[in-house]
Image (tube, rainbow, N blue to C red; front, side, top):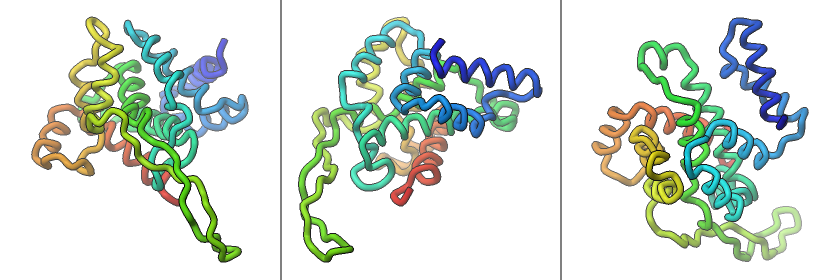
Length: 235
């Protein structure tokens, strides 16, 4: 049994014995993950294979493994601007989204009830538009300790598929999940509009999309929480 599966079994048992939803045990999950020394790549693959079962999912995962998804940064100089930042950000968004959707208010008042597969798809894959998107180049930077100028590697953008952002993620996913396994409308809109009002599109259009598709709003909240509170430029 894979380490992630063992953690899920443990947390489910904990939930039953304590009459709590195991989705809320994030702190315990993180502690247990550290104990088994699971890398972000291993955790991503474990969650993906545990939850995403629809036709084409295996080929999409193989595409990610062959790409730079597991080594790419999440941005050039803000959140997750380091090797592996993209996969870590995707995991952070997944855990934030799980926590947000587990709250009684979202379930009882807002009627947000989505499958584990949908949650995994939109959270883990919302930013695959950043695959083959970043490169490195050498730039001069002053060493604050020595006062000397040094050449250091920095991340820059080299968009090999200029198709946008959220819409690009939907486009890439749809090349693998199609037919009976295609994205649901909730999933497609969530990924497309996960940037929310920080996107460059018409604000009325964004607002309407978030109002019509609650999963889009929830994913946007999770994305912002991960970006600004878990990561950030100084984390």
